[in-house]
Length: 246
Image (cartoon, rainbow, N blue to C red; front, side, top):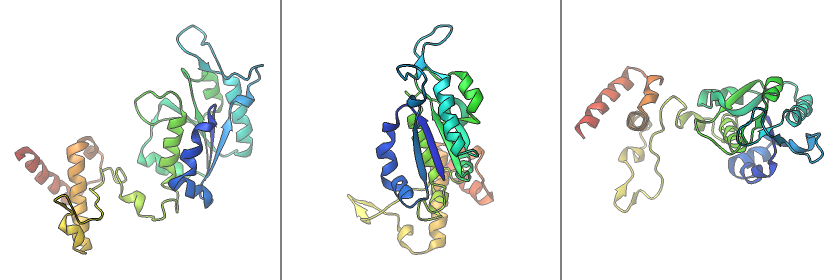
């Protein structure tokens, strides 16, 4: 997959995209992350990319012209790319959306800054907006990092194990079960015996129950849309009784 990020602060991305899983994905060619600096595309004398908003108001607004010219340049080399603006009005980033984006061959991400982006640039060269949450950031660069990391996990081969992204939180609408590693006992706290039993059927059953328990305790709202069977509903009924008694 190719992801081209349009930004006025390309220096922000270096360490994030060159280390750990994303760094390895780039080294092996599974992920091609490109950074396009919007500033050189500005036609103004001082290469500025922002100006005061018409109608007044606090702060500055990113100008349409540099963005539109930068997008035109990038799109010429990536004509089929899905063009995304990281903004608060967009669809909320989720596991299903990340899977959907991971199936694309090319993405172009536009990072806003200041008080926003001239609407004409969004109308002219953006296919959709995506939000990573209902809160305010100083710019879209951090959002682009989050989206890239989230999407990359669903690109075959990036995690090494095809099962990994399917077993983690939100993959099936539930929170993940607790995880343990060595030592078996630490300060009087032992690893649950079932995980040491070698009985994979019992381990799967335990993990499912713990996943349901974690979701019911911390994010019960997720249960409304999670894929549950009769066995899951029976477990939840038992857990509800346990919670009410504790």
